[in-house]
Amino acid sequence: MSYAPKVTPVLDTSAYTVGDVMFAPVEIPNVTSRLGGDVTLIGFQVTDESDQAPAFDIYLMDGNVSLGTINTPPSISDALASGDILGGPFRITTGDYVDLGGVRTAKVVVDTHIMNCAVDKTSVWIAAVIQSAVTLAVDSIKIRPMFL
Image (cartoon, rainbow, N blue to C red; front, side, top):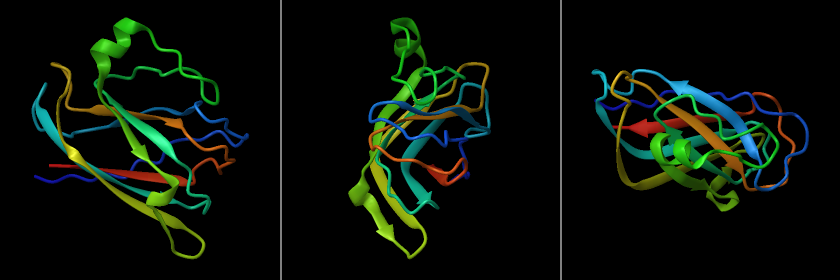
């Protein structure tokens, strides 16, 4: 079964600084049909409606674990990082985007990455750290993680 849900994270509309948390974790439900099941990540499709091509690092987690406060540097404990981060960073670079006029889009293929959901979950969570100094609209980034 392939699965490519659209995730629209809530973004800060203030200027970002390189290395700050881009958005709070967003649940991606039902990536597997059984509790604690495994899923294979093969890539991401990103649409930037702000037409700025921001670079950022994506992290996938097995729970709603905060990377820290949005628009400040990440602050995550060693225990949480070692137990809850399933994958990342998966980098989206400015050069990955294609300009389609008023919008930019990027498709990034990753090395096949197999993850297990938490034993009592069928979801994973996505969060990101910005790698560009940009100002974005609140809902201007759409991310489609691609799973098999």
